[in-house]
Amino acid sequence: MNTIIKTENVTKVLNRGRPNEVRPVRDVSMEISKGETVVLKGPSGSGKTSLLSLVGCMNRPTSGKIIVKGKDVAKLPERFLNLIRRNTFGFIFQQLNLINGISVKENIMLPLYPTGSGFPELKKRAENIMDKLGITHRKHFPVQGLSGGEQQRVAIARALINNPDIILADEPTAHLDTKLSGDLINIMKLLKEEGKTIVIATHDPLIYERDFIDRMIEMRDGKII
Amino acid sequence: MGKHIKILEFALSSLWRRKYKNLGIIMVFTLIVMTLSSILLLTYSFKREAFAILKGAPELIIQKIRAGRHDFIPLSYTKKIREVPGVGKVIPRLWGYYYDISTGGNYTVLGTFRGIKNSINVLKGKFIRHGESGVCVIGKGISQARFAEIGDRIPIKGADGKFHSFRIKGIFGADSNIITNDLIIINPEDFKSLFGIENNIFTDIVVQVYNPSEINNVAARIKALFPDTRPITKKEILRTYDTLFDWRSGLVLTMFAGALLAFVILAWDKATAMNAEEKKEIGILKAIGWETSDIMELKFWEGFVISSLSFLTGLIGGYIHIFFFGASIFSPALKGWSVIYPDFHLMPYINPYQIAVLLFLTVIPYMAATIVPSWKASITDPDVIMRG
Image (tube, one colour):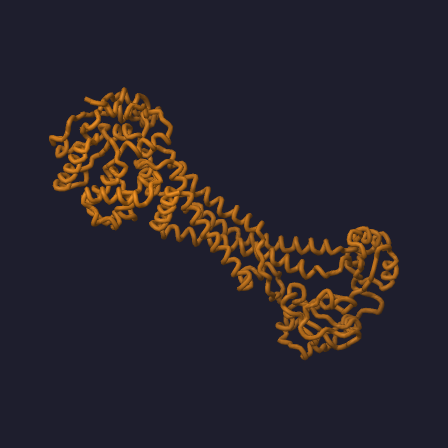
């Protein structure tokens, strides 16, 4: 299988040289293949989210290499990282990070605004995804008025609008009940069937005990164990 | 193009999402621009008005100075001044100030002289004929203060302690109010009788100079001829007006400086203090693939919409305040502390240079105050911003 993500001795140091210095990620090396669904498992503070951020080019490692689709992204200039984030990754954040005050459809189309695509194209893509995730009837609603499960679907739709190769999900079931978690897992399965590479940071057994998970990487104190 | 339109659209929706905060900024910003533009427009209009009216004023005036004080000038000076090369007509004038107890105002009383009708030609009613006694022409301010109209009589207490009564023959119109508001013009003989002035002495002498480029030379020659005189050129008078209005506008600016400063600090604080939500929003946009330049464009549009809207509203507000409501807020300070305030209609005029200065002093700092913190946030890694 083709390796799509590879990390080599990645370390992240925060507050370097200060009394409150911490190392959320320590010397992590791993490989994830294209189409694989991987869970980063570990307790709170184990470094799962930090590793996910580093892999998703949302933060830079203090040392080590992060290779995404064959390119070392650790030292790339900011504007290239933006393009990689836009074209390669779809993020599903723990806090969802939707923009309140604008509609479901606008939230979903937001990643496409800087691409310069015409409005009919944006609308078509947004409506396809909303159909797929069953939120079309809510498209004109402001996101803050939706239920937790609906908000989660909007966040997933936004992550998918650019048709990314890799989906990064940080504690996606953290704010969902069992039924909604089940719905989310079904969506993940669909994405896996479409050939997406999925990396999920979680300590929820509802996810990591499912059979669609190919592999688990367990973390503790910033290290892979 | 599609990208920029979408970013502009999102900027407008962002402004709407924070409408109460933005409305507050727009109101404060508008008030600042309105205050500053009112002062600038009013000062500039005063100057234009004064300069337009003084256009027909004499090029050179000779006053006699005694111990540094303005004194009456003997008629004999005119003969010698006429002999100075380059000098045309030489006209002695009579004028003086009169404090009116009944209204508490200071009037300027002027004896008619040759050519006066040409220098103040904005007369309503009729002007005094040559040699006509017991009549006067007054400014609009005096007419209003005294409730006097054409045909009424106006009593003025003379140097002899008796009241001298003058029939009003004409009233100056509002167009020349800045100059004529407190003016009373009477016959020279009446003037002498009123103020108890001897024959053959005058207040000053107006000198016509044929060649305008020779005015300073002629003034120097007269000064050499009569060392006890002070030649005053029209340029000096214009410069004095210029300084006077600059000084007054500076005074008003100083009066409002404290309030303006408070407004500026408030606006600055509102504009620069990016709250956690705004920072997080920048982080989200970065995380979903927006570039720093896209976020800068977004913040530019936000700042541009607020500042241009406030600037235009403030400018229009200032314009209406000055030219339609007679500058009711600042006029007492800018016109002077007289009991008889000139009530005149300023000709609407906007100086592009002043607008550019105002734009530079208000819009540019606001744009900078908006964009710089956003730029700082947008060059930070999205994960760091979103985590706060």
